[in-house]
Image 1: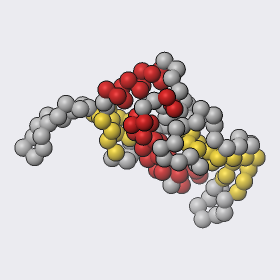
Image 2 (image 1 turned 135 degrees about the vertical axis):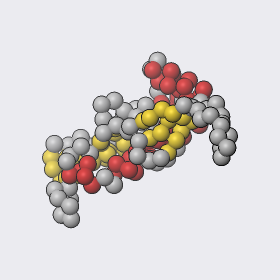
Image 3 (image 1 turned 90 degrees about the vertical axis):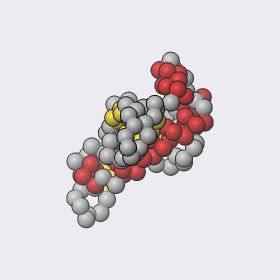
Length: 141
């Protein structure tokens, strides 16, 4: 749901808009978001336990509950269902994950410097950050 080999985020997409099946002309491309599953916690004297496991997006301290609705959406996507056909609440949850990761990625100067992240324009050019403090340049693909 977050992409295949690389994470791809349409920079001009808005929150809550169904994810387009086609690629955006202005895209942030970088490494996939790391996800870590967490089991539901047992009760402690400070916090009650519950039975909802969750996953965390690496480096964001943002936890998302693994609900039946999310599980069903994953199964539907696996069967070939378009993202725009998923329930609105699941699309919003996926959007939150995508926007969180894109926000973190677009501020990761080191990832732009080592070219593990980039901004592509219509698949024809990319914006390059040569060195910290230097001006951005446009490079043909």
